[in-house]
Length: 105
Image 1: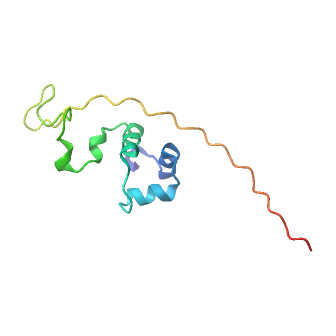
Image 2: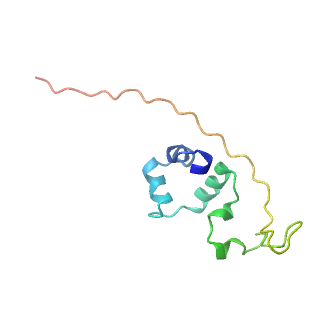
Image 3: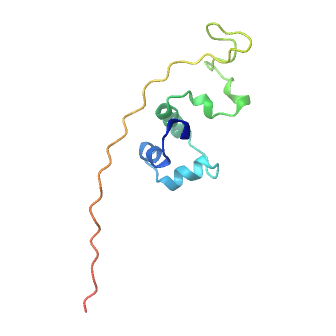
């Protein structure tokens, strides 16, 4: 996220999670759910396989393992499908100040 100049609170807005929950996930203290990884990949415009362990990234149907895509061969890496644009980030609206009630004197 830092390479793309994106902040954790922005990702939190995309996923509907507070910044603290994003921080726990980024630091590895909590796991991302699969749908969160898909949304993260779309938001960052990277393949979701970027978030999988190296030994799992090239496995499974349609995964496009090394050498299977156009021009594939030794050292060219996996074929990557185009990533659709991310969903729009909902606008943030400032919250009205909270009304505190003072105790009667």
